[in-house]
Length: 290
Image (cartoon, rainbow, N blue to C red):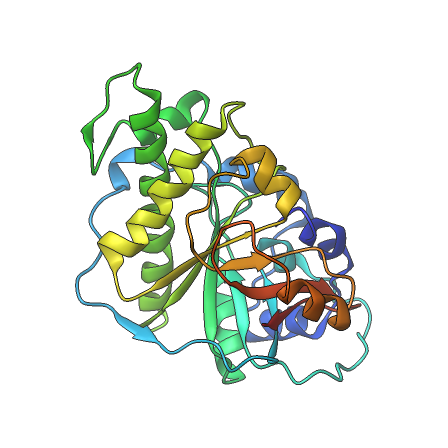
């Protein structure tokens, strides 16, 4: 996540990174970091297919007031050169990014991060990046739940692209967990919607992308909760203030725990409840359950 996350991800020389690498030795070469996003986009559109049947779903968040953390691909190269200060926070859940900063990409250390959080007994949910298609990515919006879209039907392509990118992320997560002999799939999924990614200047087309991703989880997966991570300013520019899909909101931008509590009381940009608020400390992006 680049809005609040990229401000703090570079500072993450933390216990989680140490645990990850001691657990699986998963350390990407430094020279690979800049190329990671681009190389991760080479996903064959024919691979976007059916999800496995009858998944099991894990119970998720603790009650209001619980504090957790979120991590993703930037933590794959957490520094091991110094001993981070011991955390005084008893984290109660984790949110893990399954994409690599854009739709149709991969967090290459998803399995390692999942093992660390699960090894601590933490409930886990996942988030994925969404964005509007351009260039070769438009191919991912051609065929889907609406059939085959006409090349000039931007509404159809946008919706189909959102659905297919959510399906691709879900399949990737499912395959990763299966490789760890984990049958439980998280039952809470977040869509990361922020201005750092590419979006159409037409909010109505962006709305279709977002709605397609929501509908994939609600209609194809089922038995899950899907919410949206963003800040109001990004949301208004991308989707327009009038688009309120009514799903839970994960709000970024708080500067402290007290600030997180205050944002919980504010109306959300989605029209649904504010479920989580993100703030940062010296070690993690931290998340507070409203």
